[in-house]
Length: 78
Ligand SMILES: [Zn+2]
Image: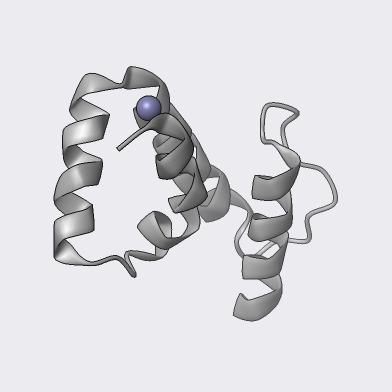
């Protein structure tokens, strides 16, 4: 798995809607790649923090795609 592949399925990783074999690939990748590990942890935390609040601004380091996905998730939860 590459970083790009990981980022593409990041939503599913957070939702844990991934196949067991994909999960193994992800864990293998995260052991080698601190960057993706940080992205995953940061995104998880960001979603937790913002989940039930009105959000208009997210930290600038959250990219647009993630921002959109987090906003979408919050709308679904409400
Ligand atoms: Zn990576």
